[in-house]
Every structure is written in C-alpha cells, then in structure tokens.
Image 1 (cartoon, rainbow, N blue to C red):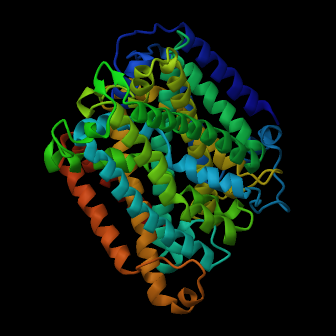
Image 2: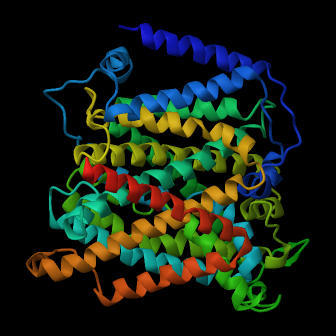
Image 3: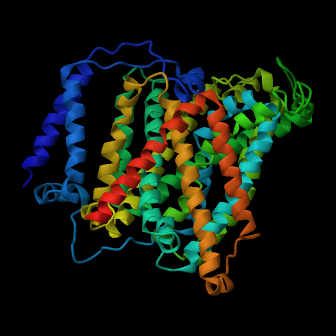
Length: 537
C-alpha cells in the first residue's frame, strides 16, 4: 500500500537534489518586505532556479494538488499510503475537533494574531508615508477591528454549534456567503503564509549562505509535523512564538522610557517627546500620506480573528473567548501604539529608513552590538509564527467547508489525534509553492501578495459585520440573552463597513496597491462561478 508514497518520496528527493545542483544566480532583489523591510538585516539577495528537473518538481506538485481536488475526494490508495504519517484515520470515532486549547493558549493566540511582520518590518514603510501620525492610524484600525471582534464573539457564543464565522454566515446571509468566505479566508491565509515562508528563507541567510528555499521548506515540514500531532502543539508553538514577540517589545519600551527620562543623546539628536512634532508636525506628508499608510496598517492586523477560528478547539469558550477579545484594546495600546511612540521619540521619523526595521535602528542607537542579530531572530520567529497560524487556520477552514459539503469529503476526515490531517497536507503542499513565487514575479511578489491578502481579510471582516446585522434583525431573542453584546450595534457595524470601503478606495488611488486591487475580483468571480456550478450539480 506504500507504493504511491514511496514513488512520491523518490521523485521529490530527485527533484530536491536537482535543485541543489542548479545554478543559483544571486543579485535578484526580492522586493516589498523582503528586499525593502528585510534588506538591512538580511541582505537583498534573491535566487533564480533553472533546469528541467525543477519544472518536473513544479508539475509533480500540481499533480499532487489535483489528487485532492479530482472528483472531490482523494484516491483510497493514497489515503491508505499516508495512514502511518498522519496517525491513521478512524472512520467511526474521533471525528470531532478536540477542545484542547486552554486559556493561556487562546490569550497568546490573540496576541500572536495581532503582532507580526506588519509591525516588526512594515512599520518602517508606514512611518515614511505618515510620519508620527502613524500612531493614530494604528489606533484607528485597532479600534475598528475591536468592534469586528466583538461582533464575532457575540455570534460564536450565540450558538454552541458554531465552529467559525463561516457557520453563522451560512445561517444569516446564505450558503453562498459561507462558501465564498470560507474559501476566501483559506486563500488570503495561503497568500500571507507564502510571503512569510519566503521571508523565513531570507532571514536564515543572515547567518548561513544557503539557498532560500531550503530553510523555507524545512520550516514548513517542521510546522506541518507538529500540527499533525495535536492541536495542543499548535497552541504551545503560538504561546512561545508570542512570548518572544512580547519580550522584544517589552525590552524596547523599557529601554525607551529609560532613555526618555535620561534625555539620552544619539547621533540623530536628543531622545524626547518633541521628536513627534519637531520635524514637520504630526502630519509631515499631509493627509494623503496618512491615508496611504492604512494599507500596511491593515495588513499588520491580519490574523486578529484567529480567536474565532480556534473556537471549536477552545476549552470553555464562554469564558475564554470574551476574555481574549476584551483585552485586544489594551494590547493594541501597549504593543502597537506604545512601541511606535517609543520608536518615534528615540528616532526622528525622517531618520528611519523604509527599507529596514525601525526596531533594529532603535536597538542599534542604544549601543547594543548584536541588535541586528536579535531582531533578525525575532522576525524569523514572527514569520514562522505567521506560517504556523496559516497552516492552522487554513486546515480548519477546509475541514469546516468539507463538513458543509463545500470541499472534498476527504478534507473533513480527522486522524487519531483529532487533527484534520488531509486538510493540513493540502495547505502545506500549496504553501510550498511560495518558495518558487519570487522566481515567477520577483519584482512585485510581496506587495501583490500582501495587498491581496489585506483585501480578502477586509471581505472576511465585512461578512462578520453583515452577519451580525442580520442576526440582530432575525434573532432579537438571542441578542437579549447574549452575555457578550456588541456595543453600539448596529450603528457601529455600518460605520466600520463604510471605513472598509474608504480603505479600498485609497488602495485604488495608490499606485503600489492598485494592481492587486484590480486583480482580486478575479478570485471572487471564480468562486461565484464554481458555486453556481456546484448548485446545478
């Protein structure tokens, strides 16, 4: 029964061997967060892979994906071949997700979901656009998403059978909403994780001169293996990834406060609150610069809804989900506003480079010689954390879609550890293509991927708000009994939807994001066509 698995292993090994032998042409620049935001600490090196065997590897990967999609099921022979890898599939038992995420896991998943490359790396570019007013931009988006999360929390707790936001989207908007939103959420996390898996390879090159795809694939395999074992391991991984992020930001804020009190002198001037307005005021680039920064700020917050995706595997959700959501404003004030406030007090905004991390710059100014290495390790774990979150969320969305007969039935099967192993494997295979993405569109890869991801997340957040509006109208009885009511609803729902519309208009105006904005509707057209075909059949 292992014939197919051995065939896969043999040919994949040959392809990997061929890639190692392929000529690596250095000097190509990976743009966006890779050549820009990461260049200072990681170098601006890219790669080009050539050779017929590489083409064979790409073709083989696509054939592997097709196996999952053909006839809405995986061939039985293949399922049997991977039993040993996935812990075996028990068709009669263990077909429900386990509630193994404890309160500390949920709290740190919420923190990890709101701290990522958007803050550590994207802040430099956002500061160059908005100046000190970037603090206000992060505060506005944070408040907006808090109300989205309150609506999400109220809906999830209104029905114990809800496992994610796609469930109540089906109930209150219609089956099409669940189908489109479920697959869109999977798509935007795949896009985001692709960018992060590419970044992992670049970060490792700071220490080791090896091709980028090697650490990227190794990271993906390790995360996949750990996620296949138990959901508790996912919680543990995110717990420690988040701890690293928290310690870094705590260190920055503590050091910054000490420097402020001392009136410390750097080569850029005195550390002072006056740096916020002495260099052109709070809006040095005018209102246009302030508005253009919102795309990167939105991307910084993607993943905040992960608490909702993990609801089905959260112990005591009636207590833990409200607790995690209600702490979001404090976390935003501390981690985003606090960190950016300290950075801009230490460094005048016009001294920060959009092509480097402001965290590296700040630690370097205070005389920490290994600052670049420390921050490189932090952004490496941040990228790994984002990829880990991507694997988790995409697999659970596929599992939920399968249970609603909107994806192949095989993706709804659990292994003996109550983990959706088939869904995890499919997501991992698609993610592995991220290692080759920079070869296809090296100059626009990161910007296009992150912008499309942000737009798709806006769709998901909007569906949550619209579902909540319909819930308020259709089920006033549940609203009355709710222990976690959304404040100012439904007015706040409409206000946030208008805000999202304005963000999309801004993306259309900005040249860097316009291409991605025009490309994204193609995804939705494809989904609606597939949904129409599915209904006919």
